[in-house]
Structures are given as C-alpha cells and as structure tokens.
Image (cartoon, rainbow, N blue to C red; front, side, top):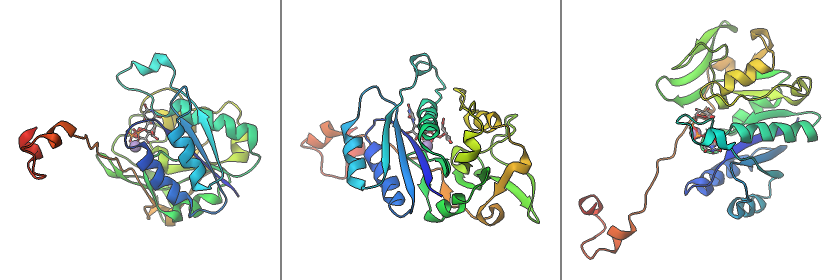
Length: 242
Ligand code: UGA
Ligand code: MN
C-alpha cells in the first residue's frame, strides 16, 4: 500500500531545514506520496522548489488557517492543512494509508513499515512528549489496558498527532470524518469522527514498546546581525553585547 504523508507547514526561518530533514527521511521510504499543505494564501516558492528537488512524488496545497482562528491565543495549528490534505486524499486515492507528519518531528524509517499495513487505524508510541516523555497506548500481554500521556484531558483517544495512521479505504467509508479546529482536541476529535472503538485499533511497534517517532521541537536561532557587526564582537562575546 501507498503511504500518503500529510505534512502541515508554514513559513519561518526553520521551515526549509525542517522540510529538508523530513524530505530526506521520506527519500528512504518506498511507495510514498508527500502531501505538503501550507498555511498560506500564495505559493511559497522556496517550498515548491525544494519539493521538486527531492524527486519525491508530492502534492503542494495552499491551506490557510481561517482568519477567525488566527487571532486566538491558542491556535488550531495545522488543522486547515490536514483537512485540506484529507480532502485531496479523498478525491484522489482509493487505497493506502494516511499519516499526519508535522514538519518538525523526527521519524525513524521503521515507523513507515509499521503503519503501511493498517486495515482501520493503527497506533504506536511517540517520544519526547512534553511533561510525560512519551505518549503511548499501554498493552499487557498484547491487550490494551490504558493510555499514557501527560494530559488525558477527558479525551477518548489521548494520543499525539504523530501516534496514529488511518487506512484510506476506512477513511473513504467515513465521508464526514474531519479534524476539528479545537486546540488540544485535534487528534481526539478526528479519531472520534471516524467512529472507532478500541477494538478497531491495531497496536504497532512491538506492542507499543518501541519508539520510532519523536516530538522534537526546533529551537529558534535569532540572528544578531547588529551585534556581529560591532567592532567589539570577537565571536565569543555575543551574550555580553546583547
Ligand atoms: C503540538 C502537538 O504535539 C501536535 O501533535 C499537534 O499537531 C500540534 O500541537 C497542533 O496543535 O496541531 P507543536 O510542536 O506544538 O505540536 O506544534 P507545531 O509543530 O508548531 O505545529 C504543528 C504543525 O502545524 C506543524 O507541522 C507546523 O508546521 C504546522 N503549523 C504550525 C501551521 O501550519 N501553522 C501555524 O501557524 C503553526
Ligand atoms: Mn511540532
């Protein structure tokens, strides 16, 4: 089966570095289609050019966050992007698997082989989750016994965006499934809109004992061009000059 990797992205200095890391990971994944959905109104030529360079089968979509959410303190990041990607998959795909891959996470190639054979919804652990270190379904003797996550928050499926994949056939049978514009509840809302129950979930990564994806976050590296131009700057005293 083909894997449709839906990646939300938005312009900032780290964007091309993040997409380079993810793109080079996907170069190691056979039978993949990369759906890159950007939070923008006009095409970002840096991204378009980079995607062409990768040689990967890909689609570039413009999926801006609706204005009404833009001013909120808690923004539904990447939701318009993922719903746009889902709409594209629904229109074009008949079989395969859908996975939401944020542009800034770190992915082991083994993850893609774990998710490739998903008949309904598959799940696995995600590492480096803030607060708990890991977010994962917990299994005992191969049977689901509960969820481990820093924030359960009354969610039916307290999982991270990178912690699950859905079969395209299964998705097509649920034309109304959508991700809600509800910060903190995107994953749970989407999974609940699929109408799944625990018995529909296929637990991967050696019964959820192996971590193949990490919620890494790239630190901002602000350029201090003014300080660098100062005659007092010697390459080591940046902090002093700030
Ligand atoms: C947290 C959660 O850990 C993710 O599982 C969840 O996808 C995300 O929030 C979310 O709110 O949807 P975090 O690292 O805080 O992740 O979020 P980002 O990585 O900053 O953003 C998630 C995705 O949305 C990224 O692919 C990013 O490129 C994209 N994004 C972010 C936009 O398209 N527009 C924005 O304004 C911000
Ligand atoms: Mn992130």
